[in-house]
Length: 264
Image (cartoon, rainbow, N blue to C red; front, side, top):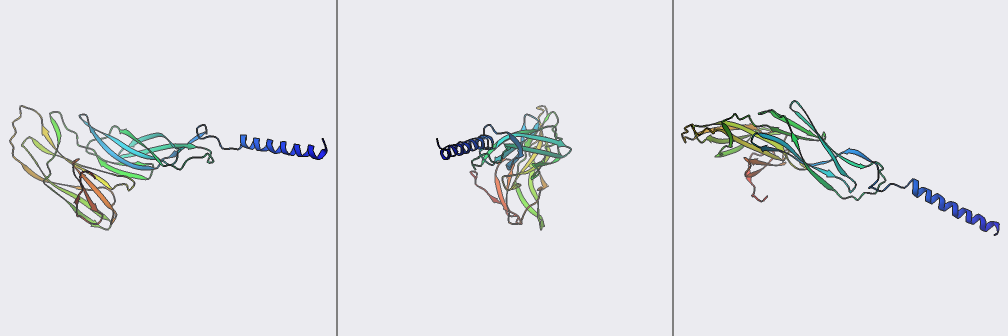
């Protein structure tokens, strides 16, 4: 074999060796086997849910985003200090940024308990340092009584400040018998990507349940007023869910309410 041919073969073999080494050592790992790191998850939806069994307890429903095909939900941590509830939702991603991931946006939905909350207390929830919710827990009901949804005869929005818009929600209600007393007005604020666009307003009365107690059926009217929590933007679209029934829509800066269809 002449020297020119031998030199050429050596160069080809050397090139193949370098290529193989590059593919084996420097190529990004497969997504399934790549080392992973924890990252903060984007939050798409969040709302507070009151569960009665029979005493009210509270849960936080969260829909978090999975930005690509490599992202997986890792955990949700809740820390309650006084009236502040701090929630962290984390995903994991491959540590090597060269790992190929399809740009497909997914989501993860989960519910976490909010234990040990005090009755008739305002709470603020911060989720991943970017999303803020507010809600009020229900008052404690003693043995021999129960909490019932109050009848609502009229209601209205009152604009208490125009810039920025601030609101009171005013409800005309009443006690349906002499065995009832006024309960609480609770409100929570949650929503989707536009956080705070859904306000839940719940008005309750307290009813005695002792069958030995005689009750007259006199209706005693009263007015309840509650300040809607949070900041509103002029021109923003907001909704109110009243006593877990009808939904109403209003525009920031206006006090006009529009009934939404039940299917919406």
